[in-house]
Amino acid sequence: MSANSYKMFINGDWSISGELFADYNPTSGDVWAEVPDGTRAEARKAIEAAAAAQAGWAALPHPQRASYLLKAADILEKRQSDFASALVEEGGAWIGKGMFESGYTPGIFRAAAAAVYQMTGEILPSDHGKVSMVVRQPLGVVAVISPWNFPLLLSSRGLAVALAVGNTVVLKPSEETPVSGGLLIAELFDEVQLPPGVFNVVTCSRERVAEVGDELISNPHVRGVSFTGSTAVGRQIASQAGSLLKKACVELGGKDALIILDDADMERALNAATFGTFMHQGQICMSVERIIVDQSIAEDFTKRFVEKVKTLNVGDPHEMGNVIGPIINQRQLDKIHSQVTDAVDKGAELLTGGKHDGLFYQPTVLTKITPDMQIYKEETFGPVAPVITVNGVDEAVEVANDTEYGLSAGIITRDEEKGLAVAHRLQTGMAHVNDSSVNDEPHVPFGGVKNSGLGRHGGKASVDTFTELRWLTLERGGRHYPPPFVVTQT
Ligand code: NAD
Image (cartoon, rainbow, N blue to C red; front, side, top):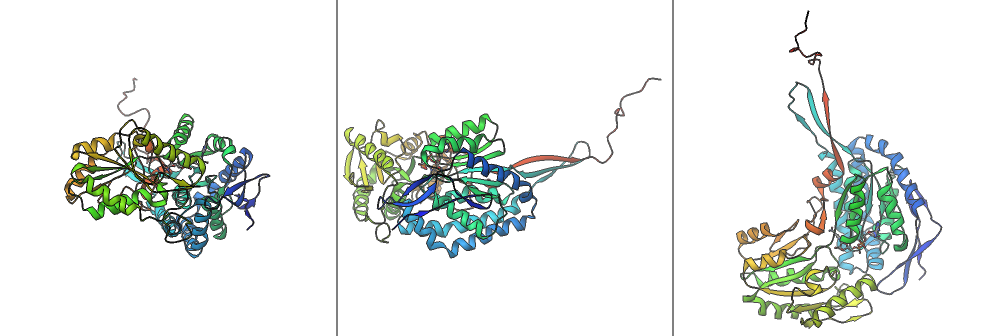
């Protein structure tokens, strides 16, 4: 099958850049698509188009802005199978994950449409009898940079509310998923006839990303940045944006814990651990990356967990029965395998997995984990479960917090009050009692603390992220100069 050739979407126009780069299918290793390798010049063109369109877009009545998002949601629903298929082909998603992601994303657009009604301000009391108002205004042009692991969902999360509240957007999807994370979204907005320049997609290869990324952050028209990706790149982007006094919301990596307390419902624990660790081959920012289990149930849990993990089928992700598909690329696979090897070399016990066939990495369980192992501290982003045994609640909390990251967490216990008390003690942006760390909904404030990020996406939190507050007053003639207490000399 010959690869599809794509064009970029700039100023309502499907323009092409001179060179193309290969977009690989990680299951087959074949080139699935050829995509424009954009340069600084295309990024600038897109930003200028977005800047020119912004005032007109922001001036539209808000139900009109919302209606574009609602129509895009409807079209996405009708074309769900195209989107799911692209997620499988270029992202290596198991078909169930592709269906989930393409089925979930219309809700992001609908929640964003509703956010136009959350552009609320305030009337303040005034010391001087003025009408004193706080209003919200869009930032201007927002650059959205997104990752490959949930490309459709995470690009949409970055851009939908930004658009709804009156910003215009330039999206740069990951070089691993430029179609499902960018160009297919452009097709939606093209079909709903969004005014030209309001939404633009610039694609580029990893070789060009430093140049394109620099333009996206430093161009003076860009006033806000929404970044989702690794902590290393996010830190660099947030620093650059900060030095230019631009607002940046950065959603970064994680090393999330699933704490299983001594009174846990074992079935619930097994399901949360298996789903949380292995969904999408563990390539989720809030994947369970450490299972912290109380010693009183550790042996029983680990035995049953390994039995369950051995039932997960690895293989062609088009098959509904194969819940474990390929790792996105060789670089990621090498990182996963080197962490597993490092752990085993330092004394970890490999209970299952630890091998790979091409990019297909077997679901892996390790015990006897110690803090000197890379897998204890570093984000793995793969289908690997390190099981750590602790003695009691305090030690569980201490180990869970012993990380530079702080995205999400799960706590399994039959005692709901105790579960919430533990949730309050965890240094994370999100925590879920009796569930895994993997949870999201379009309207919730999603984000992390520590090295997992800065700022929040979702619903009202996105309205805060993508708007500025302004103070406006209306004076009604009560202020005199010189002031009345000044006694004039005669
Ligand atoms: P990445 O940081 O390598 O890439 C993310 C995006 O940044 C891509 O579009 C990439 O092209 C771009 N990029 C890379 N270098 C750049 C530069 N110098 N300037 C501008 N842009 C640049 O991350 P990834 O491998 O695509 O995604 C995996 C990471 O993302 C993991 O660490 C994961 O935890 C994290 N993630 C976080 C969340 C969250 O919401 N917290 C969600 C998903 C993924």
